[in-house]
Amino acid sequence: MFIRVNEPYLSLDYRPLSKSPRPASESQKSQGRVLIVDDDGGIRRSLSAILQEEFRVRTASSCDTARALLGREPFDVVMSDFEMPVQDGLSFLDYVQRQYPATVGLLLTGRAEHAKVNKAQKEWSRYRVLLKPVEPQSLISTIRTSFHVSRLRQSTGRLSNLINK
Image 1 (cartoon, rainbow, N blue to C red):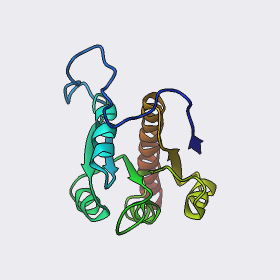
Image 2 (tube, rainbow, N blue to C red):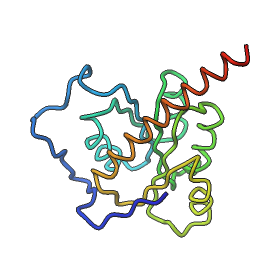
Image 3 (cartoon, helix red, strand yellow):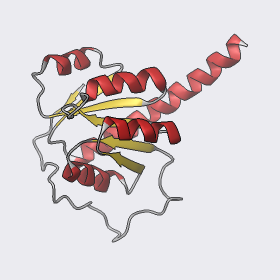
Image 4 (tube, rainbow, N blue to C red):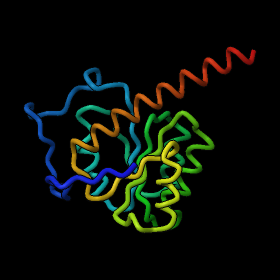
């Protein structure tokens, strides 16, 4: 699923649109955990600023760093840039799905015409593809939906384990 919005876009100087001057406390945030993987520090900071008021957000500048974080703590959603220096985001999300099947993968890209991105679009049940620049409200909505999908996958896994015992 591609999300394309013709409204104000994410920019490197994005400031969260909030009525309160400070982010929600950890207890006020949903239990949703999001991992943002992007080699561009400005994008990581901007996406984190958008999401941190509602979700617990961690960031990684490389797929290797993200793998280490995934090994230490659970995430409901992993959002990866497509164009990364060592490993592309689609290959990384394939790894995430094999190792952490309940985790929802989101692929961020500015190049919808790339063959691998088209492959990801065809496999939309596995990944959602977000086109950069993405509008903040669309991003938040997509993360909320992905969080619920992750929780359903976790419940389905637990039920399958009970049935198979």
